Image (cartoon, rainbow, N blue to C red; front, side, top):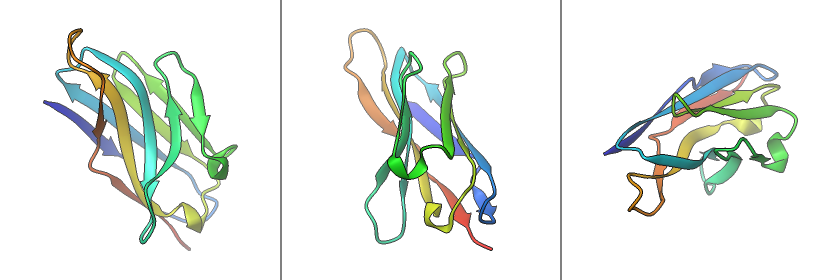
Length: 121
């Protein structure tokens, strides 16, 4: 069993900041990429940012320069620092991890339950 538990969402005013965390637990042998996705009402889930086990990052154009993704491999945790938040950042944010349970298993994608981020004045 593998679990991803997110925390850090909430209500913030435009221009404010939030930090999301996502910790992986369970039967984990190796984690490849970790990332954050979001889904706004009536829209498809979209990529926000990803980070590889080696620290390479990728961002959606809409968050470049405002959001920073990082990870602590020892803690199996990924973070998303969100600054200069805008109303259009309002969405449910989901953590994703590409990991395998042992050397003999293939990598699989796992998802957290989601955390609500609301940007409003």
